[in-house]
Length: 417
Ligand SMILES: *Cc1c(COP(=O)(O)O)cnc(C)c1O
Image 1: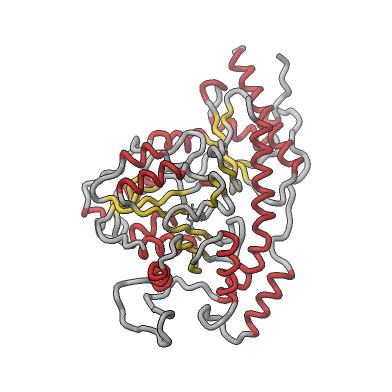
Image 2 (image 1 turned 135 degrees about the vertical axis):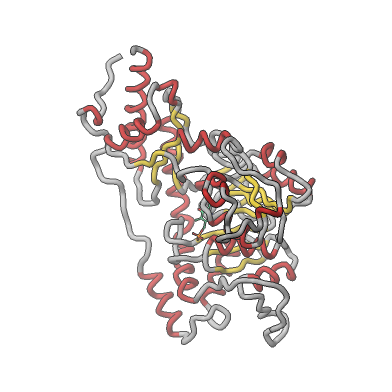
């Protein structure tokens, strides 16, 4: 079989047109910001912008309550704090995630325990979660990676049977549907980020949904993000301090931009969803290439697209595949985060606080290579593509064609060495 010559070896590039670009902020954001400044206060409790932002967010998500915070990291910490996660508790989570998932666990002096992932969705496997439960386990922080939903039915079933709280990390997964329900509304809490790299941006920021009609739980969540100030219920701020809580307040400037950004959210997620589906359709059936599988019965809003390379079938290393693809005009990353979280020095040395082993020394947990073998293999064999709401159908077609060209080249070589 005659193969097209790879660009890496002097052949023509597949992708010669530039990827689509566009502006994320415009007149709407400017109008909201200007109104926020005219209020003469930028404090969320006195102004109207954060309140309106949350009202709109609650409506989109059909949740009774949510709390605005300063980041996605803050959102997860707030959910953990409100859920009562505390010293020595174990929290099961994913080894492939942003450190923002883990920071709140450790600040609550709880112990992160890592569950292995599914080979093709890159989300936590329910069976692995269940195998990590001990008498000290108090919560599961599921990470809906890259816009793709975790398999929530079995996870919620496990949580109910073991009496565990479920916190959904939706920082990468806006308007992600799981069996008709929105990710972030299924567990006890849903946590979102509006940092500048997510589907929508307020510079930095975050939201926590409280998926319960329990008003006291909402008030506790709200207070946890505001130094444990109780600003509702009575007409004076209750200043008695019951326990430790950080200041994670969102400002009116973020709320203002957020109001305008929410209006773009559906469009952004639909565009990204369609782009990801087009890549999958374009590379399905190519030898040695495993598409990013969307969880059964769900809809992904593709924060990124990550496929895996079968190195032995193609007779090529992932890194070489990645270089060949880049040469074709398709920017990509070999892998995602540099290593699984539990192989970061903080875990290997069990040193979260300088000069201390606390809280790790409350447990006999060991973090070591091989703990989550599939997660480790994912990072060794994945190629990550950027996704943007401004990318076009042509971008998707040409990207898929480039992946096909590279894969077919190596597959033919492997068949006729
Ligand atoms: C971005 C991100 C976070 C943290 O959000 P910040 O706003 O940056 O603090 C947490 N979890 C995941 C999966 C993320 O992608």
